[in-house]
Amino acid sequence: MRHKKKRLQLNRFTSWQDATIKSLARSLLIYESMRTTLHRAKAVRPLAEKLISLAKANTLSAKREAFGILGDHKLVALLFNEIGPRFAKRASGYTRVINLAKRRGDDAKVVIFELTEQKPKVKKVKKVKGTKGEKIEKATGELPEPEAEEKKAEKPREAAAVKEKAPQSKKPSKKFLGGIRGIFKKERDSL
Image 1 (cartoon, one colour):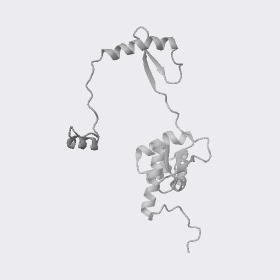
Image 2 (cartoon, helix red, strand yellow):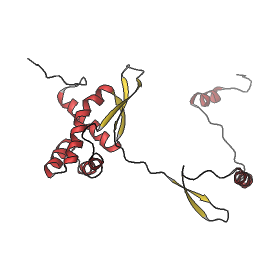
Image 3 (cartoon, helix red, strand yellow):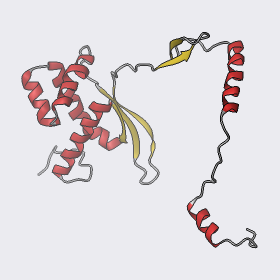
């Protein structure tokens, strides 16, 4: 009898199911957020939580056990050096599931499966030319946009730059059927 042997089988035989769950756990650790189905997220959640608990322990035996599951030294280093310390103050609840919608083809529930503590995103730095040709580094979102007067002053420069370019002959983009029609089309035909 199979009493209390329930698990999410994902309609796969055992080795295929284990490979799927390990692959999803690897993807979660690498990208920290992924889109998947609800049943897959529920199936991989215990393994992901176990790996993060091992990373919090940070012992040699924990690293060996994590390597046995993940099979990649770089991923184990990422887990123990970056992800584990992030969850040091948290006792449990390392992952979360956010519902999105149902998939159109098979009506499966699609979710976002992600770590609760994510790495802060670094804002990109834009280089903007100053008034006297000097370059000023400006982080996106931190400094306000230039005033309307400065924008008006920049527009004539941009227009002059566009006028200086030589006109290029544009070839019409031919789609597949458009190209075939051109071969068989005669001048007297009007379509």
